[in-house]
Image 1 (cartoon, helix red, strand yellow):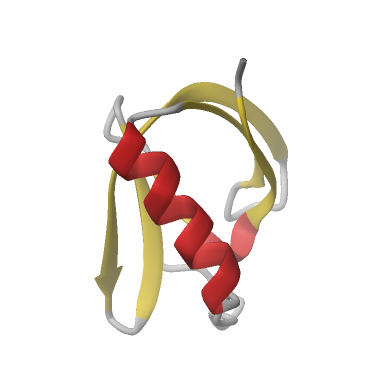
Image 2 (cartoon, rainbow, N blue to C red; image 1 turned 180 degrees about the vertical axis):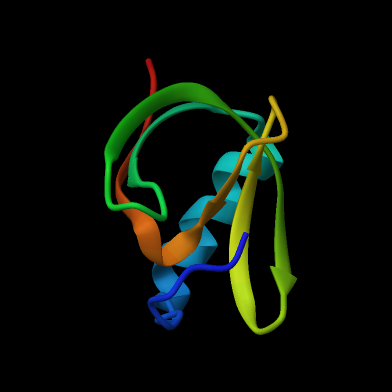
Length: 78
């Protein structure tokens, strides 16, 4: 899922938060931009975090991949 905008690394703190959400299997609300810059909101569970070609992605339960630098907001759902 390559995009024309170069990947921007996310902070270690943000990555750690994502790892905790994934490890605990928390349901999360993710607001993100797709490659065409359209905003989307998704409520799901993080299945995995992967690095591919020096870009990091969330893999959601539905197998949707979200590049980490496209995430605008992510919060645990109560």
